[in-house]
Image (cartoon, rainbow, N blue to C red; front, side, top):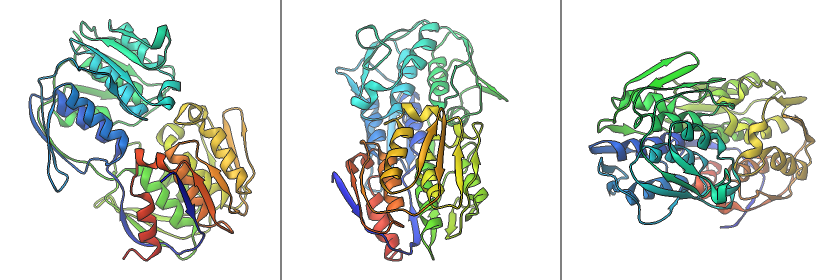
Length: 420
């Protein structure tokens, strides 16, 4: 489906499960491929991005068996050179993490993706991998995909990325598993800790201290893992339930780990009525009156993927909301500063960028035709905004949502019918 038309109306009521956390799904698949034995994974994200990573580990030798209930068994440890180019689809996380893992493998591989991937900056992973001794290059000598990797012969390094990035940290740490000594990443600001948490859980030697993470060479042991719901997807329902009058939504089993609940803090500061149960992971949200706020640059690394839908919350809030230090949004699946400004503007909301600051003024949303620019988070954010517009909204490029949340439209329909 390339176009979705969303009519305003509500309330939203009931419960919903969002796909398994996408960031974690990529990493557990890679760890299962490296482990010498059989690992069991439940709750894997069903988005196209993760399916691409699943296909890639199969192409390099992991053996897989998927049960009718979605349980995935992977036998790893016997990896080999692929017979074809490895396609990551639309996944920036996939290409950057896999580049690190493959840099440590004693064979040649080529990573490529769609047009969006070919536009995204890869110097941030190629530079540290080259410092570790990997022979890596972008297309025609550039720093862009496709990436050619001649793996093996890595040395451990201390590396401080110029931009705080969990993807870059993960890339370097995955490469460090195949280095000849310890590898350390010094972070300019805290980022998601998925890589080091999963390393520890699978028996890899890790030392994590404030601002730095070190990994020793080695391999994970086989493991079992239940992937919890993706907070970045839960954020869409948190905003939707907050802005649609009389709504009450429970998003079940949402990941509770460090660095992923920044959107909850921002919404609560705006006046949202929501609670994330630390025991069950259930996120309960009820409609509330929102006020504008300031989202500081120090908060952005923990909620960069949620900013498009938080901008929708800002559009429905009283006053002005400022998102500071958001330059990283310019190099996502789309230039998200431009595309957020564009779709909110089309729906009647004053939004502007001031350098690396996004400013959204609260107002009244109007139905409109919106171009998602084939960016899944822009498409879903526009769908949430459409719920409180004064007429129908047509969203072009809806097929992009399949990269992360194929069942979004069905879940929306279910919540509009009371969760039945």
